[in-house]
Length: 210
Image (cartoon, rainbow, N blue to C red; front, side, top):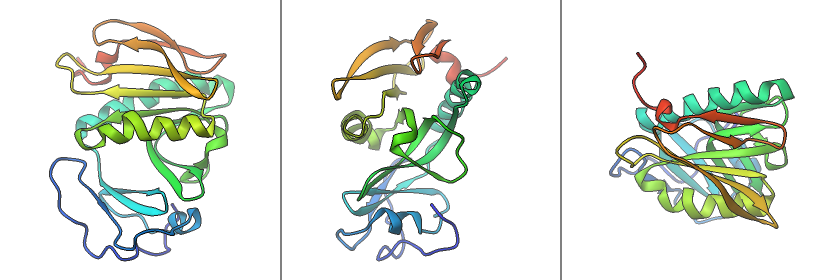
């Protein structure tokens, strides 16, 4: 989103909620556009998405959530850099008019110079699931990204006792098919793009470094 523009219309103070990812929406019901979304001023400690023409405000992720996203991003960025691509965290994705998400990790087919990217330049989206984003990350976002033609979608589940589990999907005939499940404590290989793959143990995304 562009800095120095305007705040979220109609929200006033953000509503309080339980957990690290409390959600509220703007009081105006709908009708906001991608231009409206991109012109918002940054909201410190929150992420603002545009869903069906409505602004949705999410509290900033927990430290554990962000640590996993950051480490996964570094892993992916190192892998795709030789192909002229890059991976970024907390990046706005313009899916279609009236719909834009801020995704935990985005692999872009080109260098990104702004805070948002068009969905047509996205090769992979990875979302780290939090308690209040389960429905969005498991159902709504993969459906939207599949419809928009994003080739790969990864979902990282944090609620397993031994560490994160990474579910990897590839787009086939307009829908995502599971191609790999990477369990903590087991190194596995999975394709990022047609030309790039990575091998890693999901446990390394969170465990304390020695």
